[in-house]
Length: 425
Ligand SMILES: Cc1cc2nc3c(=O)[nH]c(=O)nc-3n(C[C@H](O)[C@H](O)[C@H](O)COP(=O)(O)OP(=O)(O)OC[C@H]3O[C@@H](n4cnc5c(N)ncnc54)[C@H](O)[C@@H]3O)c2cc1C
Image 1 (cartoon, rainbow, N blue to C red):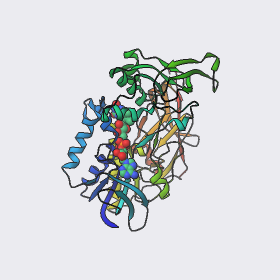
Image 2: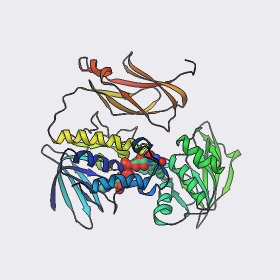
Image 3: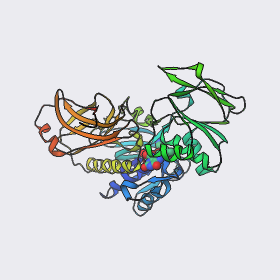
Image 4: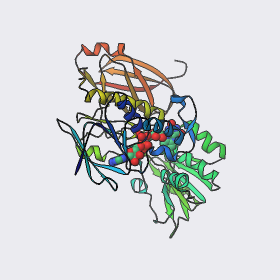
């Protein structure tokens, strides 16, 4: 087996992988990126709608345009990008980290590196994950697969479409299928609120009069060779109300029922996986429990906006570069947990005496909500956010002054809570 030595190996060449590799290269480290697809860019390449880059570039770009900006920068550096190369095994170690890769072009290789950064993205949940009863005809796709078929491979998956799940990919595909001449009969969502960004509800459903069935589920799929119809029923008190079910005649069912970080490589190496994000547990430096193994982007937790993926990945790259160059981090890290109404908070620790950018998701929807950082009964910091929804990530920067005292105090875990507040408060 050929052995390759680098300072840093990045697994995945999507938005996260490109940003993290550039951050390492700016520190003059020898960086390599392995990507299992034949070209770099990740999921951005199939997202031909606009809406990318507003925060980062102050412009509305399409996914491929956003990717292009990073790709051009990567090409202008000495970063080695190996496409068509899949990382299959990761091992931690004292002297170096090892990653074994397979590739039709390069064969089996072992990368021995100072640090590994997992920027592996996420995958879609499918019919098997949600268990819709009925026959198994053709015409059932995950929304992301349908997006790839239409936007990259040039196929139209069907002409009468029902979409399950109101996440952003489902909403964007409702509009895309309409533009392609298909009839979208509706988006069926089990929750009482839409799980995609508000701007996508308006621009992808309301502008095209596509019905959104909130608190509804698909209870049966019909069809032999091809999907013929689906049965939709209201969802009340945790059950489908079959007496009020109705049929939608369609030939295609698209599933947009959630994304899961690709965590197998990390898990098999012994990295702790969070049951809330399904990605690795990381500390304030975005490092996992295996020293020298870092994670960022959708492989860490599912982001709604790519600009934040790039920002997080640059931070991750700087921390990995510190690790490789022996800049030891002696800062005290205090465990941080999700409290009332918080689905998850990242990272899993707060670095005392530094500013800490937290990403959290709410379990409740409200016009105004107060986030509070507690140590036991003591409130350490609080901030009010507007329009809090489970679908939209909250970012909260805890300033260095707020965490200064923590370096002197005992390391009692912290927790963060969300509480809806009345508008007049
Ligand atoms: C349909 C859709 C619409 C979106 N719309 C918007 C929008 O309008 N605006 C916006 O800002 N954001 C949007 N986003 C979000 C944004 O595009 C993503 O959050 C971001 O691009 C994710 O980047 P990533 O690098 O983490 O993951 P990815 O782009 O998925 O990249 C991960 C890469 O890792 C590779 N990989 C995985 N495992 C291995 C392995 N073992 N070995 C080698 N390579 C591996 C994969 O092949 C992939 O290329 C959208 C996302 C989707 C899916």
